Length: 247
Image 1: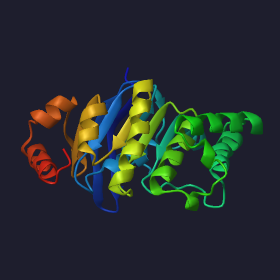
Image 2: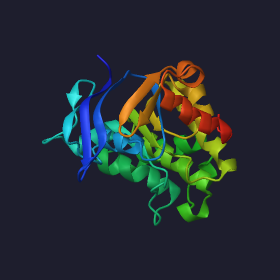
Image 3: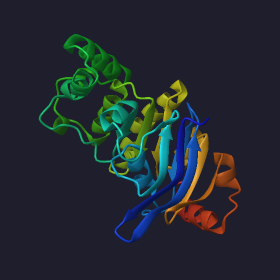
Image 4: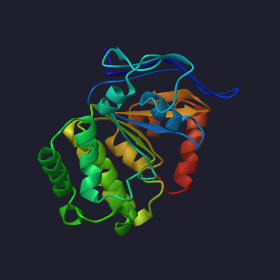
């Protein structure tokens, strides 16, 4: 049994069907990159897995547990599934360390000392312990995104969802954020990434999924998707990516 399973998942915004009977699975410790044009459904798919959007058909399961539909314990789900957004979403009135500890204390029930120790260990890992008492507006965009990632990791999630986490960054800041994701992949974290960073996807992904207008058009290992795509639309998309210098 796969660790994450989407079974005939549908999502509508009004009369527009943005996810069209998605069948998809992810194994434990697998890194899956979702690619496709803007509006293809990548972000919506991630948001449905984390119950930020309700689905209109089908079922989502994590390790066999149904996590969609009525009666789902959303707080429990979000303790299992961490999510990082392109807009950082740090609490601006809290220091870096406070951002890292509040969820641990409120949702996991950790004591202040334990939460602080975990937060500082993660800051050391990303070479930012000296920024523990800074506020988000005192950090660069790349630093804020690194904090957003380790804030999610501080909750010890089983799965990490990353939604275009480099889109809001200047090009020179992208590498420092992707390095953290690369390390997490090496540690065996189960991850789904919606990304436009094709070279990075080719490097870290176990599986690449190409979405087109709300359905999965093609999926497979990165060497197949990037070197020998079967679908004409996939080839067209990647041609544009190559011409833009992103692969």
